[in-house]
Image (tube, rainbow, N blue to C red; front, top):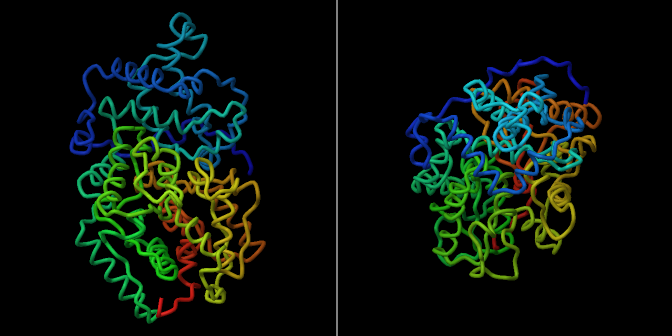
Length: 484
């Protein structure tokens, strides 16, 4: 990827809407910027550093080697040097040094230490909302400095003084009140699922069920609420139901836990992270399920895989024969390995497919019982259901995958310019594989990636319907038996 010429401050005006009191106070944050916020922000930063050894190491250990400078998709797409990971980190590191290091306290100009001022806060608000927390820079940093953790800390500090982001905080309030990011109440969910049953019956002649709040079901499926109606997300939900039907496994969705996503991670709020995740444990106990399966959502899988056990565990009430949590791709892959699913791959012969590794799956979790399972399993599912598959260039997939440009809580319309520019590296890799292999469709296992791509591919002269759910491909090819 060609390194762009520098265009200093070219994205300084890119920032999301500030949250209003009604989006802040239900989350335990001040309604608006509080009096004395400068000192309160420094105090909060000190608390975070004292609570997280990792954060302190990330702030202390950078040697400005430059390994990360050209690894951020937002820098590659915007040319703004403050979108270099090291420069973004320094926005917070400069305040940390001023107040929590000897050199910063006594020789601030020598070490680039700064006081917490309105100018600094404005820079934080702009550039820490130009980070999708994808962690690609951490892969190439010789010290493993994770800019995502620094970004989360900065957002947590800003929320603590009343300078939160409207998009993320408004969604968090909806989850607490109703149970999902979109604010879909139970009757709307039930109506949607009944409609899916009718559609699948009409298409296949088979009575595939999409159950809601069924006590005693074996599996509780938690999935991003976008799966209930958005395109191509809903094709994935249809596919999940067909897999459960073909496997003969009873399952259910839950109105109480009708959201797998957890925006508490994006704003660095452990309290909100915990509260949202707890809805899933409560639903599992109430419904008496034996297993919890997570649908196609990148950051939801990171939260489930990396945090559930300490957030909402132990899961000693579930069947110990199965992993907790289990990804829907693991579930389907296991059935494929056992020969329990039949596919007519020709059903996808109108497609030449490639696969986009989603950041939080690729770099913040794993899948299955093999190293690199998060890369192998989705591809094996695609190959089992499609005759034509080609990967993008090796340096743009797997652990080095490029972000879609819309993750980390910035999938909001006022940031569309940033989102388009940030998607440039992925779009370039996609165009290369289109030119080389005639790829027509790109599949993903993340709700945000699918929503972001369908929005921005037209800006790159590509069709919106080329974006696919992996389980949408499964849905097309799976052979159902009416007697199942």
